[in-house]
Image 1 (cartoon, helix red, strand yellow):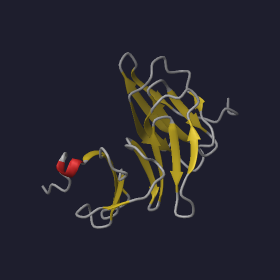
Image 2 (cartoon, rainbow, N blue to C red; image 1 turned 90 degrees about the vertical axis):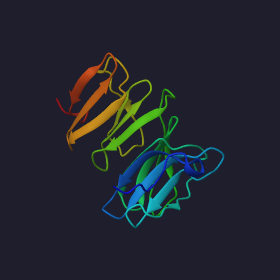
Image 3 (cartoon, rainbow, N blue to C red; image 1 turned 180 degrees about the horizontal axis):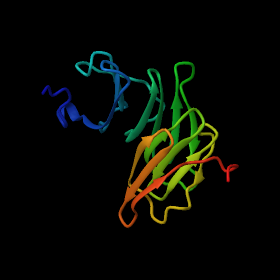
Image 4 (cartoon, helix red, strand yellow; image 1 turned 120 degrees about the vertical axis):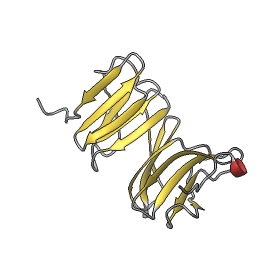
Length: 168
């Protein structure tokens, strides 16, 4: 076992990590008083460099699509970054904080927030609320590219298959 990042060292508190492969990965941290909230490694996590983002506060959730392209969520804002442009931004309609992000493909994406679950069928340009869930979920796990399990207090486990609104 090798400890790569020690929580609390230099005021850094890891929040989420996601690797593209065995060497390339991203780390979102809580680091009070600085602008460095997203870091990248290319050596399996032994060294990290900060990534410039337009977000000026802690990034609690993100999804890496491929190296250099990712989704970042903080508060009610969802940002898509890629190597060609810094970011495009979508705001969640009810203003609730984002807890989880998972895009199934270029068009279909799922979000969980402090108030509800959301689905996008247009690459994150807009989101519709999953009204089938009676309580806001606290976690989202993908079973495969077509099925998700939502969990949370008073919600138990809910297994859903996102479908286009044009399908029966």
